[in-house]
Length: 312
Image (cartoon, rainbow, N blue to C red):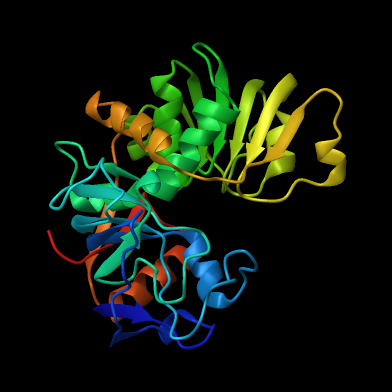
């Protein structure tokens, strides 16, 4: 199989294309011909060598990075009954996948518990964009913050891969959504339902009190200044200090995200009800485009999700 790999940790330009043996299925897994995969901030951390155990426990070089994917099932283990050859699916690979088993490749072996069927109307690129970013947002908004109708939520970093999903999920639950973004993203955020977009370059969030905060950028202190007593803040952008975790009147927590079929099915429901727009920028499957995607994400000015397209 073709794969985009690195032979050492370092800058984005260390990626190159090579041929690797396909991994073999087990009785409890399925093989997928990958149609597309998306790039996440954790991919950048992995490439740079910043991730530690358990992510790195099974890694060897040359290393195939990547977790999100969409694809078509080509083989089914004898114990798998839910899926069949030819099914189009999307999902995520284990956080501690083997060094030759990431999603930056033409094939992958997958646990059926971490995939769902691509619904009608969703492209393979949109499906590949959904698992980690959409799952992270869904866990935060629908589960950990449990946002209710008429509550006000601040989403810090609304235009990124996770933030854009979070805005829409919060709106689908009847919340008033305030978010931070640069002016270039204001129109898109208003289009997907944001009630107020604050330019973080010029304006601090103030003169408002919110019931919940979802922080994707690491500004925990800023979120706490507008969080009501009794409110909750969930962050995926930074680590709370011991003092923040010990606040007597506000709940602060770091979210360890883990998406599965149940989370994906919740996102599919929103998509089929026209409550979830999936914004993607697609690039063809080359090492040069993987390099480009990593560099764009490192610039911290992405809109939605960057996806590498292999085949329809």
